[in-house]
Image 1 (cartoon, one colour):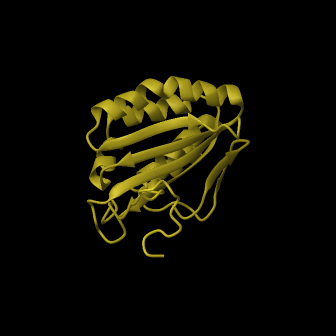
Image 2 (image 1 turned 120 degrees about the vertical axis):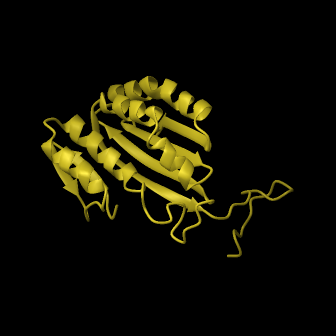
Length: 180
């Protein structure tokens, strides 16, 4: 996706548009009758944008690189946000327990924003994430999140070709990372 997607008062604002397969989600969103259905369709479109790309694991085609997914989901109010987080717990656990390649899968309430969910996912590689996006756990989680008053969602997948600890062996924070 080339820009954020937001939904306010039933209208769709796609800054820069969506790419390729994501256009399907936009089409569904435009035909949806309520804001929640539009938000859900756009959230799915953003995630599905990464499926089927050439070299899904990275821009260089390294399908063995770890993939980190980050996202934020905004809800109309704190009660909707809290309801979505609670209702999705079993699908988060099932994803962690049942899906090969899942390292972390967390949808959590943002302690600094009463309407925001912060999403963090870690996958062993691109193919593992691609399989997740076809799994019942993904569809169940997506549908569950959509049952609440979702206002907007924004997500990104990150290729992790290199990693290190934040602290050195003596417990001191590093001042340089990856040769910088």
